[in-house]
Length: 121
Image (tube, rainbow, N blue to C red; front, side, top):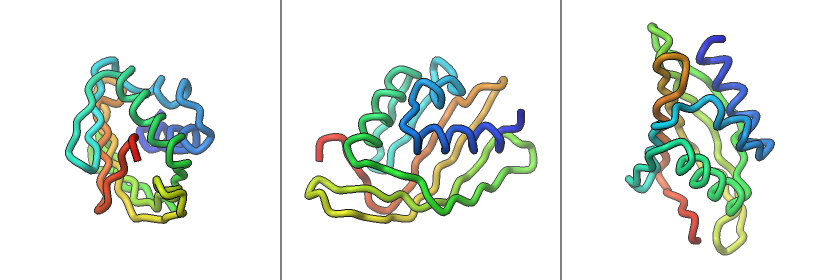
């Protein structure tokens, strides 16, 4: 399976809130880099952090465009992240997610956007 195909499956699983499915594509020592500069290390921590953000803010990934590097090790996803803020107002923000794979498992997910979200608010 190509990385692009895996990323498409992961995005669909995130939108379905199926953490058990999307996390199965990640290495045990995978890294999540968040917009506010925080880094989360380890598959369990990554799953917990991303799941908390998705559920807390009712996040959805929309209007996705996938771009792959020439070697097939990285896929960048330009998308719109929609959800609800701490004040329960809806938002739609542009974002880029970069997935990196090594030895058939994703080792890093970098989430880039101009306005960081956090699990607390």
